[in-house]
Length: 117
Image (cartoon, rainbow, N blue to C red; front, side):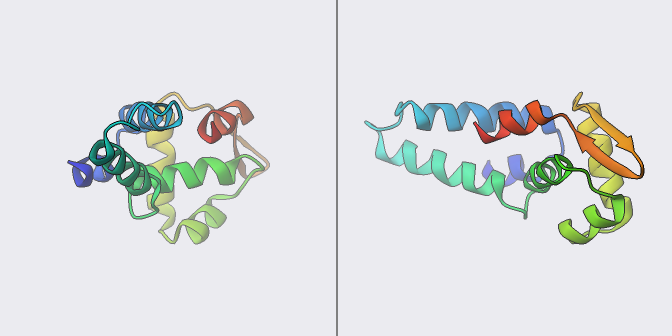
């Protein structure tokens, strides 16, 4: 299941799962069930990994906090420009507010704050 989730490109669904897992871990809901806690921690780590589309999209959002060009996104994500544009499209489809100003893509700081929580 973890492999299926991390391979998906639906940012909204994966974000909801990721936030729910992080919240449950933070509030110690898994503390009485060690196998479930270990599985939740492993899944969070896999989701945040740059090996997953979702993980690369998270990194992309963090990079766009200060503004970044499409070439810089491709270089820092180690992907083609086309793939960087595809990730941008996925984020826009998920209603992530992305702006382009002077050739640099930016995302609302509130989105970055939400991801850090």
